[in-house]
Amino acid sequence: MDATERTPEDDGRVAVVTGAAGGVGRALVDLLVDQGYAVVAEDVAPAVERYWSGGSVVPLRVDVTAPGSAEQAVATAEAEFGRLDLLVNNAARFLRKPIADSTDEDLDGVFAVNVGGAFRHARAAVEALARTRGSIVTVTSISGLVGMPNQSVYAMTKGALVQLTRQLAIELAPRGVRVNAVAPGAIDTDFIAEARGADPDPEATAAAVLARHPLGRISTPEDVARAIAFLASPAASGITGTIVSVDGGYVAQ
Image 1 (cartoon, rainbow, N blue to C red):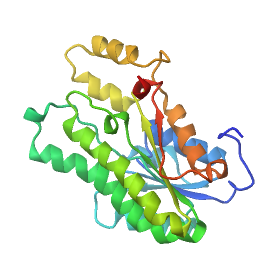
Image 2 (tube, rainbow, N blue to C red; image 1 turned 30 degrees about the vertical axis):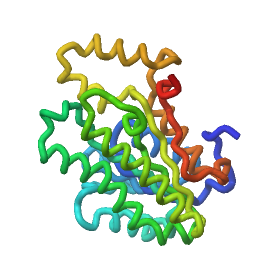
Image 3 (tube, rainbow, N blue to C red; image 1 turned 90 degrees about the horizontal axis):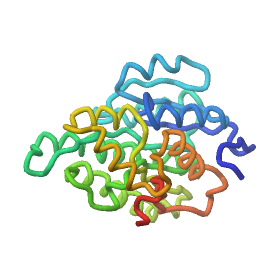
């Protein structure tokens, strides 16, 4: 079954998606709605309220690091739609710095969003997901699987998410909750474009990155969104504790 096809099981499902205002998050919300989901679209950016204004999507403008934001997202899903079937931990901060230049503020700030946000949302969602035998999908990165130059802080956070995924898969399996992750390589998003803006030779860097992807292209937000939707679907009912690389073959080398 194609992961983009709507199935009878999809209709009536409810998701919370963090980092929903751009890139993978925005593509995913659109895809989930096409599949029949209702979605709480969570982001700190004002754009989240411009993209969606009702119907099957409830925009929630909050910071994933703010106390109570995770509980607010889960409560909104249950209050607006009566249940929660899927949590997607997508909110993230990227940092490209050598360790010698990385500050304590860098360390604390990136961990707070990437790891703290995912941990708190998973904790807040456990009971609701157990009631529906739902699932969690976290967006990590190939930076959490292999070494990358100048990504010591960012890569640590993504590695932590890989292990959080495996731990929660074992812990929540007896309650019927599946937990998986996707690990994108380079993605064609504003998120990456902004990071490259500070590069002294962004064209050379972009060419070098592309050369490391055996498929000869970098992934799109839609590529990643489709992988997330598959892992959340009934077609993946036997899959938990798995990290799916969406990277054009990067980590297979």
